[in-house]
Length: 130
Image 1 (cartoon, rainbow, N blue to C red):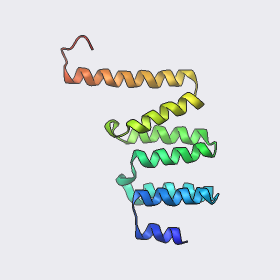
Image 2 (cartoon, rainbow, N blue to C red):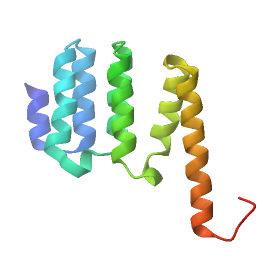
Image 3 (tube, helix red, strand yellow):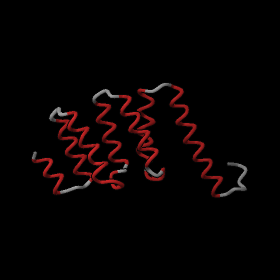
Image 4 (cartoon, rainbow, N blue to C red):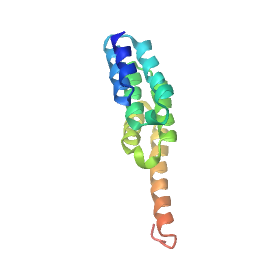
């Protein structure tokens, strides 16, 4: 109850993550999931941050909810601008190397290279070496 009052007094992303980690430590897993979801609804665009999706996915991995973690990573990567989610992408790549198939890892690496080369071509359209 005190932690929920803390959220009301300090509605910031760090507060939500701290309370969710507290609930996880107390083994109240459904409450921790509720807090992560509540942060998205309460904070809106401020919560759409790689820090939130990283913490939430790590929580799901700790509970061995691999499918949920995969969906969280994908949702985060789709909804956060690519220049702000480098760490989340690296974590997702490591996650897929551990829990995914070889084809999925290959697809991720190819997507990263493809976006890199598209960026080069946007900067210099006449660059034929890219």
